[in-house]
Length: 600
Image (cartoon, rainbow, N blue to C red; front, side, top):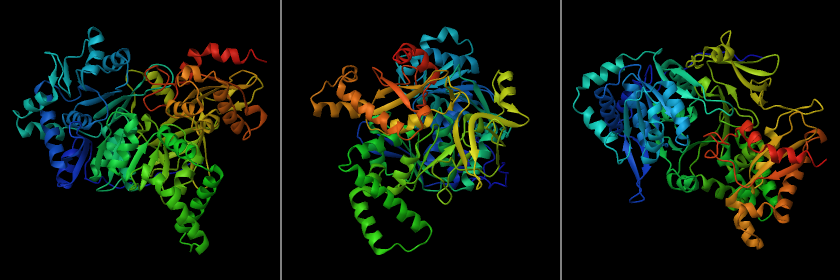
């Protein structure tokens, strides 16, 4: 089945590319706040207006010209999500240059690969920590000429961001306008290196027309609107956060940036009170586990969620809610729903999840509580997105319908194929990979899925992630893993069993949940010790049993192993968007996996 394209609406600012977007936004949205950030000295949230944003970007962009950056040159950004990332992004784009994002969690070797492979002439980095990474591989970066730091660093050969702006003040306004006028749709806007769960990252070449097309598609559905307040913690090096940033600025929203601390995400939400919250499933999973774990009566909570779903669906259909249902709904709102909404700040109109699968039960839970979390789907190669659920058209368990302007079809082997103006131009310096990925104008996504009669797309697995047991049964591990992660004490679950007689699973414990529980039980509070205790093994076994009850014998998990520590980006087991690098985990814990097949 195919879903065909339609005409899309023009840009909110009337921009034709990303270079003229910011200047046009400054004029159109004058007087509105563009950014919010936490002043660490005072603890207060500070605002940056659209006029201030425009001035900073203009000065920094002219500063880049002053240090010799030419149209088409590559400039890397190595930093956490923060206001200066946005300044740097637009400054590079307005100079007609190409932005090369680098994940702030990358190792020195990973930074070297991206900066060297992209041939970046300059890098704008965050602080001494990121500078140390570049220093460690500096002799392997022959094309790198200039290092710019957002924060003051102890180095004579580094230009501060303030100094860059100062250099820009000495150049005429005409230089800024001339560079912007020289940018066309075919001008390359960015190389985004896929974090990848296997192999070295590939540089996706995305031009200004690709970005503008997906922005138009998103705006046609009014996903983001003027005066929206967005809370952003996702890495701006990832296409998902970048799309939110660009789309927000285009429509006149304000972006509140996190404090670079995962433990402060929920407190930040409660302070900022955003109306729009983009996230990856892990954050929603943790909030869900927290709410479920604190429920005094799980059965009563499930009934409250079922009630919430029923009443909200009646309200959406315009049906009158019977008095007895309304009273029960109001009581549940006071006891449960309002407290869950409060975790998001109490002002959420819509949250969106992407980058990895999320369990349907979690989406239904939040919907029942009055927090609409909608799932979307896409990849860097689609300039972020291809499909998304909408407030007036959603199906939990699906990733929504394709945007107008995007065509989707299912190949004979079940692979999802996509075509549209948002499809990237190819992989930098990798023609073979490009030819394998774009065939006959269709992007071969590597995802397996189906489309229902109403055009909603469902992702059922990854071609590379499908487990084929020794008995020849094809199993997608994502559902089993998501169900396990709904348990408040489980952080990660990685199912294994390719060409094996049965399935096994590696489990990691969530320290934030298991340690307080262990204290109450009088158990050790060290995770390495806890994992061996009968009490913890019994907790995990119960979670496994619950999952096994949902599936047939072939898909049941026979054994589990609790690892000594949680999976992380720092140890190389997770991507920056918290997806598991399955092959790396399998290799790293091969001994533990093999041991589970010596038990039978």
